[in-house]
Image 1 (cartoon, rainbow, N blue to C red):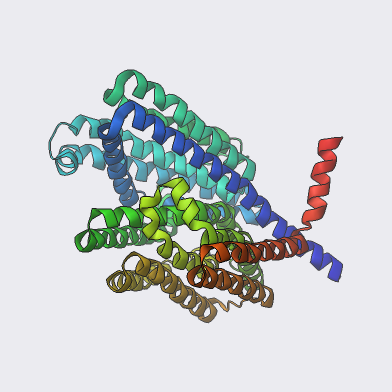
Image 2 (cartoon, rainbow, N blue to C red; image 1 turned 60 degrees about the vertical axis):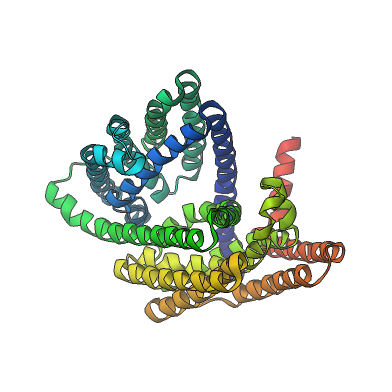
Length: 500
């Protein structure tokens, strides 16, 4: 019996690791495509052209965040829950209702942008010359929302391969269709390039979502309103909390600009771009499959606890060695990615790297609130979190400058972890496993050792000693991952296939 349980646990860990590996690779590929696109746009359009692209896309993105009702997040729970029942009729009805909502919210964003086009041009560009540009790019709100809807269907039904393929092909297609317009038309090609990029993404996701075997059913307006109410309610609060988070982030940037100048804002953005892009990539890769898996078992206390603990363990085992490399060698990474002028962000990243440990566990726990569909709990949890994040950022910056923002990041996520843990323990009887606690303590102590070494010792001593701690962390992660996944067996199978 114990062997059966052990095999079941190993299988669960392997699913987590497989999803992370697939989407981690996809994230890396998409980042490379983004870098190539940015470079080509910079060369072909110059700074002013890049500015136009940025202003058009961020403005429509903001409107989309208001009008999409967060359906791309909230509906994953509904689709995943329907899929896990094995009832094809239930899944078909849920998807049909969701598709109607997606078209409605997409059209809402489209019409709103059309109506506001003259004012958007005036507000964003301080003239009316871009009114027609907003008229045309308004259609991207519909295209993007419908495309996101197809992605939800793939995610909710856990079609890992289809999701990965659609993301990769969509990124390449967007690059291929947009660059010729920039090359031949310059700034005049910006609007058609933006539209065709959105259209190509939709066509790719639509193609793969249609490969999922879901029966076609007719649903009445009453059914849409009744079944879609929960999706819209949850989605609206997710969307609202996202806007509040965006508002807090922008307020912090404005505050830094007023107190320290634009250069300080640039340094702040550069520092958290490293944390957000390279570490955030792991969270994005994991979250793609984790949320629908957790939503499918959210009604079962034991299974949901198991999912949360296993996900947090894998997150820490993957992230810890990466974070320790950041702690020891971040100065070289900054020079490689930016230049020596950005060295003032070193201290900020050191402190923020420690905060990622608490973010990883808090992130895994926080998904339980979404999976439960507790919209009000989720909303107020995010409101409270944003309040103390804002307060700590202001205090940290005033006391220690840019480094203080790293300190505030650490304490913000320490508090956030405690907040979601206490909340979920009280509401949903959450418990953290001994295995998770052991992994956290061991890796965090090693990270603290790296942090202490780089703070107190000269570089000629800090680098070799820090490297030893990194290797110990890598070895620990390897042993623990092999214990959970059977990594050695997996590698042997892969090598056997390659050599036969």
